[in-house]
Length: 343
Length: 288
Image 1 (tube, one colour):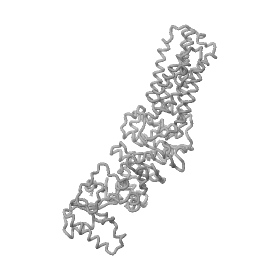
Image 2 (cartoon, chains in turn green, orange):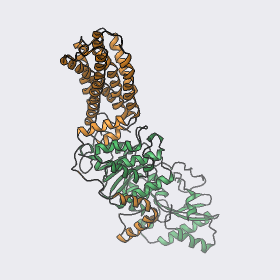
Image 3 (cartoon, helix red, strand yellow):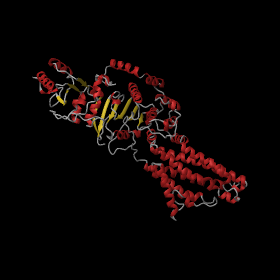
Image 4 (spheres, chains in turn cyan, brown):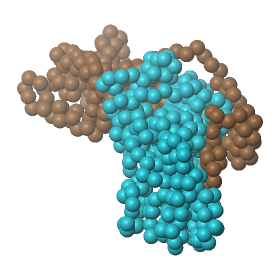
């Protein structure tokens, strides 16, 4: 890590994102006093974790689901509860809260990874903390477990409590976080409120400064497929030119991007700036151009993430079309096609 | 799950109006009623808030005892040791003369126990790293030296308790075989010195084990190191019965009527030096 600096506001849920090996876990371990930084500091309520008088009452942390495997889950928690000086009743409460009450007497070694994650969360909740620090909490959880975790985090946030959770699985954080911090190669690449990212406002300001030219996924886009792609592209460019004639360049370019708003990305496919769907419909109807597909892709966190880290989504295929491409845009991550089916 | 429009996919709390939030909360409430109900029954101040202060050393020692008692291997080792004492009390030195029975007292009550406690100490300290639970322990008690102190104290307390048990058992066994005078019951000073030597040596061995486990951060590494160090000590004429591992043998292996003071002080000094080294070694990071 070279330069990681950010703060987490009380009462907010902050998503701490970055690809594997980007320094998320190390950052959290520095915050929790397990790793000493070579320089810099991490403070909670103005104090380092190891200076807190009774840290487990203020901060609950889930780093990795560790436990002595032959110990019963309830004993594992009691061993944590003793130095926290919370009673055995509290142990039963947290077991109940994470849904492990029925298997409390079973040895942890018999637990699935998902159950151990829940047990780890139970341990973090023992001291009834104000701040939760979760490192990859969704690891090993099945879809039901992920939904449970998301619901839990939402109710946690609704109670006005604070959480900092790291993840490389973006889907599970988009729905619960207020603030997004993305780190890549040991640096903070982005620190922005979720609302800004959702509204697409962050893309033009911070992103361009930090990540260079935007990809479509980060900004959002309209995809249109038609057998007459060349004709449609021509008509749309003309339409755009006529509508923006007389406007200053700065505005004319909006919501497009440098190099022109209409881009050919496949044999029958055009990629347009967000908000162009209606225009496409009108032009196509006027000129009787059949459309095979027309859909809008909203900007999303995943897009921001990959735009910043410059890495394609895992499992993403490269853009299949290698034909004539006026703007040479080959670095665009593949559009997940299944999303089109939602609309 | 994927809905069109940012308002559906994200939950913009910060920028939303109160009405938006109420509506959103209501919608969310339907979807996750179970979780909310659970947390409500939990109650908001479920834990009476004491003034924030670190847990006392007594609490930490109790925690270590709880961990030992709920650890199958450690609990089992102590139980097996105690069970083994029963046949040994019947057979070990059954035909010996009264003087030999007294001379065997220290070895019989302490030799096995000393090395058991050394191994147990290794497990107590290294087990936290072997199973990575040191992360949890240090999150609750970030003052690592207090955790190590508690482990040392728990091991010492266990050493004193088990020494008292075995020592008493062997004194009673000797008295039953011969008479009270054979076991110096008429000379409590001799008896007290013999017990003190056993207890101190056993505890010193346990402390060396805890320190080695804490420094090595792995039980096999610590155990094999101790084994290697012990064998090395036996080879050297000057180190035999004077090093951290074999000094216990030097004290406890000899007849009760003789005390190799050099071995005894070597055992005590080894425990102190190993403890100091372990406290220094605590500063190392605990990476993920």
